Image (cartoon, rainbow, N blue to C red; front, side, top):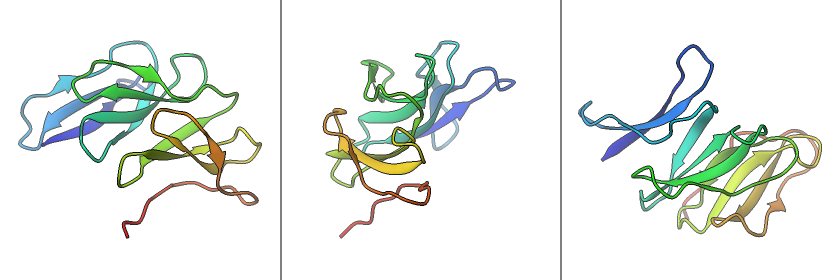
Length: 131
């Protein structure tokens, strides 16, 4: 099983890598001048949700765990960050300030149907509980 981590040389950019739990087979998944961080494996291990500022704004993206098929999920003014997969992989909860304060939002895993979950005091650190 691979571990996923961002690597930030001198805080200029951050790229995503995977590495086996024994420290072997380090593999770079992204390679650009953007900051790409806060990775989260889908429950099936095949897809990774992460945050990137490659468009000039912090948005949520997906990439296959082998580094292919990169695609943008969110496209809003402001920050979309901290993606967190539902246990069945059908939804992604995330933090966004698209409605002013940082709030929890949820969307389908293909990026469709974004809905605000919280209002009021700022919300951070989304997490799911298995039933």
